[in-house]
Image: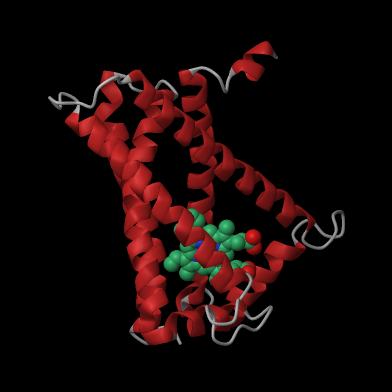
Length: 232
Ligand code: HEM
């Protein structure tokens, strides 16, 4: 109990918080990416994709009410994002304070560059998530030109066809940022959670790489297919 309460104070405690919340995020993006592939005819197509979106809302009925379990998942995700950002921010502040002068000789150039890219990628992803919710979940006019509640397939296709493909291009840029963030994040979480055994280094590097590449390509092919008119 005391351990759990002081977890947030120690450096390793906050790294564990980053790792566990990151793992929740990885689970979510893999699930979400797989679900999105249903827009393709061979994976189900338009009506199946909409049924899937409805199934996410009615999941658990009639034991639970409509969207109740979806809300549980949303709250877990939101909590994970908030804790992940807070831990990253607080670890960054500590590392800045620990350093009395700015580095002159960059002995840890690689580590510093990686953490710089993680912060940059994290900010791009936060901006992306807010835009993405306004685009496909809330359907804010001006961001989505013709949002029809419940017709998730239509919203996706029209959302990517509109505004000279600018939203679709932004998604592609964000997915590249997601790929780098996932690669380094997955690798770091293995280390934090104690899998940094020499024997497994190559395997874990490869696994981090596979997760990043599969998720990035799996997400990116949806806007690309809409832009090419394969999904319409
Ligand atoms: C090309 C990539 C993506 C596409 C095409 C896409 C598509 C969608 C669509 C169509 C919805 C609405 C679903 C519905 O109303 O049932 C949605 C919701 C959502 N997406 Fe994505 N998504 C993508 C990437 C991402 C990424 C990378 C993240 C997170 C890092 C993400 C997080 C979310 C969240 C949090 C929701 C709201 C779920 C809810 O509360 O109902 N998406 N996405």
